[in-house]
Image 1 (cartoon, rainbow, N blue to C red):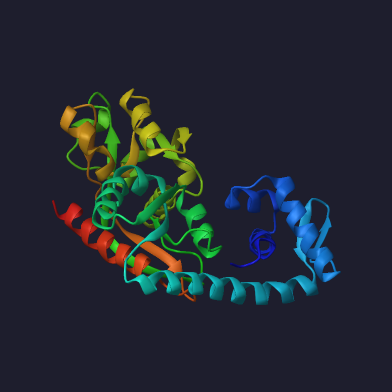
Image 2 (tube, rainbow, N blue to C red):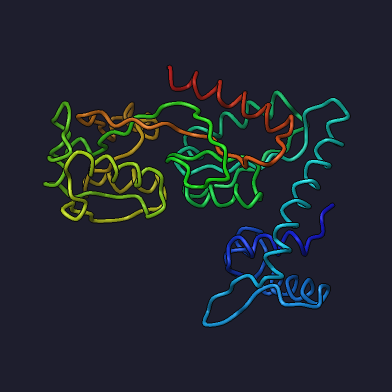
Length: 301
């Protein structure tokens, strides 16, 4: 029920970019610009300063942002509370997930949740952890699943389960003969990496630095934004990767890849994030409880 112009303004104010706001809202940039122009005409004042390829909020824009967050939050809560008066769990469920979680863990969970709650309409947005955090903070998705610690102070974080990252390589790659690999040994071999912003990449780099490895001494041969693409490249023998063992279970069974534990072990906690101040609906609460239980069951197998 909230004014669409206010929703667009909120996205632009948070992103400080018409282009990025358009991406988050799944709109064209001209449409976003038009909505902002209409709102500025409505208030008869500029809400953004534009210049040198950058935008910033004017004092009026800062005031509008304060009220926009309250209005949008209350509008969303009203919609949810009214829909829940039927007593049924249903409606749109906007879930965001980092690529590894989205490709290897969530599809089955979403399918089983839909089977249990047939009035739910799930929608899955896939991006790297950094992008998912941003979209949750912008209230464009209900809940996010990420692979790295949250950097957003306005987000609530709940740990879902643990995940182990291991060395992944072709059976013919030199590391395949080892029972475990130390961080220092990795410097000697070509490395296939995830893209900047990836939770896997961030977590791996922190681990290597803590264990005395200078990232600049690594031998990266390629960067890829998809876990599936990463595994395809690694299968060719071009280099090794550090990836979730969960992502290679099928390839391990087929003998296409080998996984070797790191020494010391590299484990991380997968987390759910959602806005601290936002009212959490019965639907989101039900999905949080359901997915947490399913992830724990899956990882214990």
